[in-house]
Length: 551
Image (cartoon, rainbow, N blue to C red; front, side, top):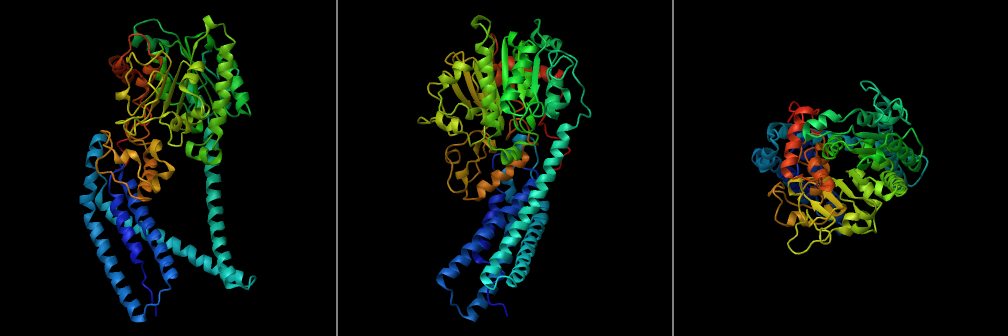
């Protein structure tokens, strides 16, 4: 007869808390699928923590309760389990209303509560069964090890280790297959056309081969407004923008790619333009299409945009395989282009700008750790960093929080060079106190990438404790571990949230580039006019959610 409760009372309590926390809003709106995942994983996490703590407690106190007492506790636990499950599920339709303001602001509907109620428990049971199957496998393997290792404790430990190694091997095999699929996609040229203009890399007159650019590089050099498109907006004669790119297969090292990129920009006449923009790409070697297009409109086509590829997989995968890859690439690019500019007579030098988004922002900021904004401005006439991950050391060095300063919008010195903006609407393009050399950290107050710090699981962040920015839900609360897990799951929405939410900055680049380049006559009204014009002549912005994708 079993003498211990089939469920942990402590685990049950934390699972109940985890489920209710999963229904509270965080920074971004949720689809039904994301809500189901969140309402499955948080209770399982809570139960695992509580059950483990309970076992440790019983072991430390050497539980000596009688058989009758244990049976009574078992029955009480079963009753509490039923009441907790029914109560939590009954609260679901009402608790999801906490997300109303965020969903309405994004133009979404609330997650479907029947699906949450029906699917979350089933998915949770399935995951528990998988866990029990792995535990049973460990016991079987432990019995097999017992034939070799006479100690029962050692054989049990070896059985558990064998299961861990087996799971790790399966995950490694899946990652290898995923890596292979990304590499194959990177080499696939279907649907892409070789550019004919000498202003583009991969063209017949280019120093780099079309096939070696990678899929994102080929899209970059084939995209963008023509001179006539730009003239239609500015009403003035415009130049054909230059786009230069070097793929990771064209040169083996960051230094070689950077030097080849400099040569490619020089070949295309890029150093004869008014501005040169050096982009540190994110995973896959991607340059945000909206960023590249808008800087060309702001510069009236008199600009060369240059980038390299250092990875054929997405940013999260790149960070896992090569955490310092973006840093090395950025260091090589900064060194190569600043040296190239110094070789040009001062009166003939173009303005030099640096740009990075997400992983590209993080990698390029690492180059300047230990430097001041003044030192950065000695090499660059402007810098635009968008959606910087929370791990940035440079932000930690530069950011300060005078009394009354919100956690999502710190200040840097007197603000004459570097500034933070928590949305494009908060960028002051025409502020006379902002000098000619400008560094702009543009991020969103609802971007989990910018706020998921390692300490979030154990300590409450300032941006939750302070009065909220207008797009952070008032009902967002902080719980140890649970909030960290919520924001980690929020990452899955990065590709589908509307512009202005989460990690989607499609509607922010025009303001960012207008502020950093600050051409004469540009203000917020000019940016709005550009956005309206681009909506008519440009392809749809990436990152726009597809209404057909299920809620």
